[in-house]
Length: 83
Image (cartoon, rainbow, N blue to C red; front, side, top):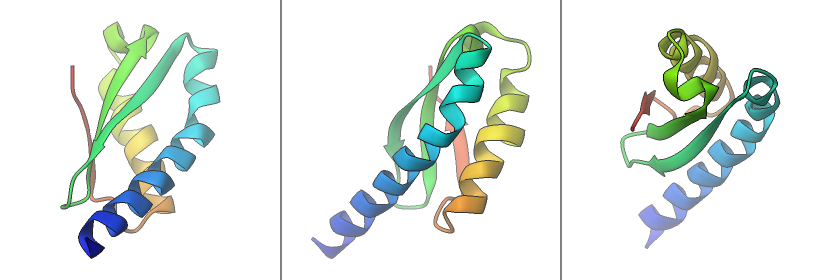
């Protein structure tokens, strides 16, 4: 139960941080959807809109989204895209 509460708090933090990123993605016609935060700190997201088919989506994921989430939330270890 304690583990579930901790995961829930981390997920809430990630959701809040994604709100900060979202306007930049939407400005380019894309978006990001949070799917899951694992116990090991892996954040699983789905890139949507223009981001889903963009050649630069890996750079956006790693250099943008992952870097920002790691800076904001110590528990985040990695961000991966799931289709």
